[in-house]
Length: 181
Picture 1: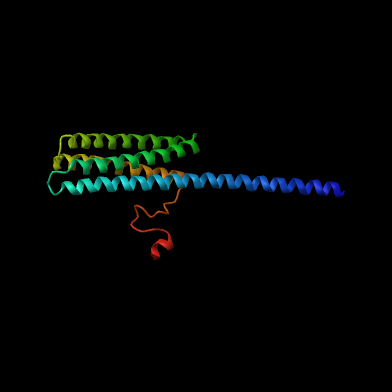
Picture 2: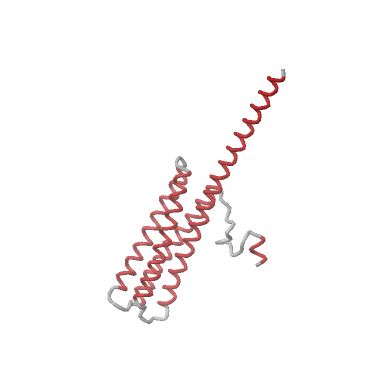
């Protein structure tokens, strides 16, 4: 009887530990997904900021020094590459989710459109001071593509059930600690 009780107790402990480990693995996957979404959203925001800087500079209708164009175009590309790396993590975590795959494909298309605008910015800066109208036009193209990508990013967040704890897009943070700052 004591042996049966001991075996039963051990079995229940093992089953309980297995369930706890499975629950932890699921929450780790969810946290990893949330991290990938928050990170990629941050990279989009930074890419948009750099695009806006170029657009704002060009509003003064003065030639834009090529170094400024190159610096911001490089920063936009760097942020897009970092966002894409985060999305690669999402694709690995949700390989059978066709809706998520569709959102990721749309994001890739928007990235491609933004990079086309950046290539045009590079061409405008290649011959010396850049024409402010060309900088304004191509930075606006990048902004349109990045905004479309950000909207798709938000749809993907919603689909995956990731809360926007970063407070982006809402004008205020959902976190009480952030609101107090």
